[in-house]
Image (cartoon, rainbow, N blue to C red; front, side):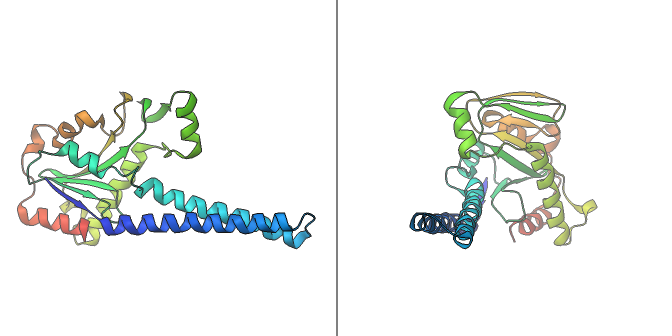
Length: 239
């Protein structure tokens, strides 16, 4: 299996996050200085202090947004690559190929799969296409409120990713009727995640079931793309 990671994109986004956090601290400091040096501030000084606080919060959240996607404690490419190790050379795992594509894309003989990876633990339920999560109590719940990755709707993220892939292939001259199958899968990488799936839009699995899910059923073992077409698809997704 080939693993292609866009390290330049990751490094750039992490640097942006660090710069935003540093800038946020600086702006907060300005607001504090204004408040401390003016015990009875006039309206201009109060407006400046509140503006600094709001701007600092915006910068902090920008930094958090990028860290939640590209931060070293969040990114899952190494975990996915280790789990999928052993797949033959026809398979490729693309990690962070573009800001306009899903973070993880699996390409194989039968087509393209968008992989939406979640690091959440606890009891995770998808029933009738609706997601819910019981994170547990105490410190786990508190840490989630203070800055853990938002859970969101994994199925919606897969749907969005599938559409992004299809649009990219169209932009590279592959009309939708000429495109390989494009599907998706949700994988929970935490070993303590307990899944209860009953009627979900896309396949859902833990790490143990990921390889079988990527390989799919008997039909997926049949090559649907020749080498030339496969190379064209990979070039479109990495170019």
